[in-house]
Length: 255
Length: 266
Image 1 (cartoon, chains in turn brown, green):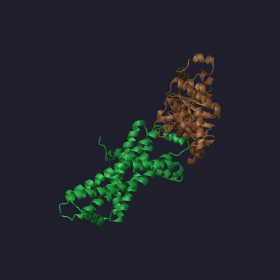
Image 2 (tube, chains in turn blue, cyan):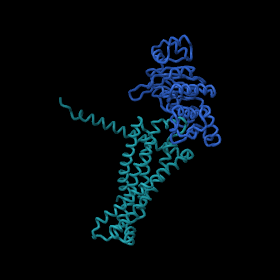
Image 3 (cartoon, chains in turn red, brown):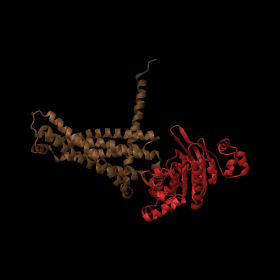
Image 4 (cartoon, chains in turn green, orange):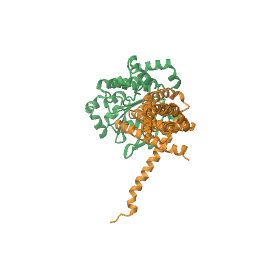
């Protein structure tokens, strides 16, 4: 389980998170919605310990992430897969080596046979052809880079998957492919996922629960039905950009 | 209304205070980076492959430019010696002058400054780009240490290879200087070797090597620190690269002065 307790974070004068509390239950997918630049990625980086909170606590499996020692934090990170917004692939390595680096168990990583099988399996899971493993990141399209990023994140068989804007910058067709992939991985791997996005339609498709981060605070949390039924002005304003609310409120969950 | 001297001095004191804190902050973070890298040394399996790549890139990749510049430096030193020698001194002194100038100063410092540009800029740009494209965050998110996997192999490779480059530079500068001295001064081989041996002390090579190790540390560790802490996109990478070259070059000149005083001062 992932738990944020009264987390606050500011960068110089800019308050990014203000007393944010949020829980992600085991096995569920939570979509964190919010406008661009509101601090969604900052919140996600708190979970994996890339950013430390000014106040509050972040718990993963009951462990306080900001208080972990270096070695303990490294061990915790081996249980968390992080999909970066632009893939963050290592551009000096080919796709095979990029995905292989995601194998977080050192013995498995050094076992060439296991590495080959695991990389092939991860490529299959993200719907990429085996030939892709020979390419360099610069040779990949945006959608392929995202999928290789996901393959790297799942290579270490994580318990948690954190997606940072997995569909940003993609056309609707590729966005649908990635959303389908997140759904399928959730189903096949049974991981606990947090999906940071400003794509409302995608979040309704993949998430069990949705949270809205608005002006440094969690403005609403709930199932898609609860979010749709919310009378909160910020929630309404955010949803209206993507949905015909009246039609949806009559029609239920996913579009 | 008159402004008192104390009031006038306040902004200056505030500025100096902030600047001091800034410098102390950087020094502390730089020191912690070195400590973190030292902690990673036992994990040689993590940094070993990258170490070999870096040693090849820094050493073999820089060999041509280092030899070219040291050759020119040795040659020009010989030509200028020829210009200044008007018959007042015995010719064999030119052998000592050229040999000592190359080994004590030109070899290490010219090599250091060239590598500050070539290697320092590359390290800062590489790490800076990796920082702004989240590749360093990605490495951390996989439970791997960027200090051990990225910074340590670069610094260790520099510490191993740069002193070797300096010795090649010394040899090239000396040999080209010798050849040019024969042309410009009409000095014989026997006179040149006599002069070079007369003024040479074995400590001179140690001095050159010690300087090379200090310069190697500056050439790798400073760009690693600046590149690793890059911020704000492509502009930040450009700024980090420039800062790395300037800071490394200035540090090399400072180290040159300090080491001369400490190791050669009487």
